[in-house]
Length: 433
Image 1: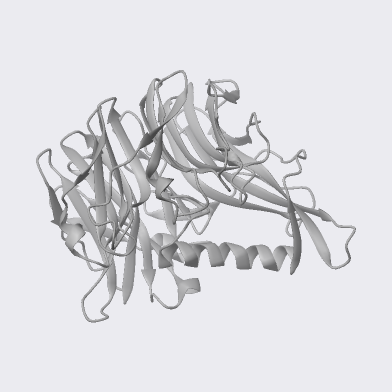
Image 2 (image 1 turned 180 degrees about the horizontal axis):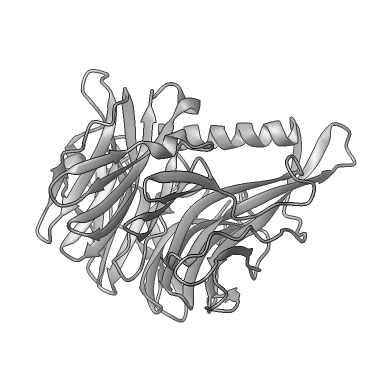
C-alpha cells in the first residue's frame, strides 16, 4: 500500500471487526492459541508491566551486525495495527487503546532515538460504545490516513468515516457512500496515500462485491472496478508505486460453490482491470498482502489450503516481474506459517512476512522463523505470547515488526489468570551504524 520511498508495512483491517471468513478464521486461530495458554477463565485487563528482553543478534549484514530491540512506546497497553517508515528517523505506528474495548486510537512516531505520541490523538468518541483504528498510510509527515470505526461495530453507518492527519491534528472525514446501501454497506480493509490529494481505500460491500474508493483532495468517491459486479469478491490490501500503478488484492469464490481463488486488480492511471493470477497448487487460496515496488516488481502474499480447514492454511508469496508470476510456497513450510498479513521487501533477496502472527524472513530462497522479542524470562511457556500484525523498514538493517504481547499473572480467582496487553514494537537495527 505504499509508494517506493515509503515501504509498505503490510492489514490489516480493523483487528476487532473482522467480518470475512478469513477474518473470523484468523481470530479463532489466535483465540485458540490464547486459550491453550491462559485456560478457560481469563480476566482481561490493561495492566501495564515491564517486559521484554532484546532479541538475538543476526549474522553480519552490509557492514554491521543488526540485532532486535524492543523499543519503549508512549502507551504500554496498546495493540499496534500498522506501521510505516517514511524514513529511518520517522516511523509511524497506529494502535488501539484498550484492545477489545475500543478505548480510542493511538498514533506514535519513532524519531531515530525514541517513540513519542504523534500530536493529539483521536479519543473515544462521546455516545459511542467503542472506537478503534485499523490500517494507516502516509505520503509525508504532514499527510496521512487511518481507517477508524467510531461506533459499536460495522452496523453503525459511521464506520465509513476515516481519520485524516494534516501534520498537526486528526480530523474525521466521511468516506464514500455505498452505491447500493440497501444491499450492502461499505467495509474498508486498507488505505494507501500517495499525495495530499490522491489516496485509495479498498474493501467490500458486506459480501456484495469488491469496493474501491478514491480521495481527490476534496472528498472520497466510489470508483467502478471489475470486482463490484462479483458478489463474492473482497479486497484486503492496496499498494501503490505511483499514481499510475496501484494494486489491490483479495479473493473471490468461483461460481456454483467453486474454489476460493486470489483476486487482484490493477489501476494504470485511467481504470481498474482484473489481473490473472497463477495456480498455487491448492484447492483454495487467498491473496491478503501486497507490496508494489514498481510496475514490474510486485509481491503478493496470502495463504493456500482448503477453505473449510482453517487451521491448516499455509503461506505463499507470488511475485510479478512484468512478464510472469512466480510462486514461492516456502513460507508454508516454516513453523508458524499460515495467514499472510504483512510483507516488507528489504531487497530483491531479502523478504519479511507476518504469517500466522509470527515473523518469517527469506534470504535468497530460504525461509526461517524469527522471534524479534527474543528469549523471555522462563523460556518456553513463560506466559508471554506475541501477536505480530505489520512490518516496515528502510532497508535490510532497519526493520520493524509490530503488534501486541499478552502476559499472564496469577488471579485471586481460582482457575483463572489475569491477561495483560502490552505494546510490541520490535526493531532490527545496527544502533545507528
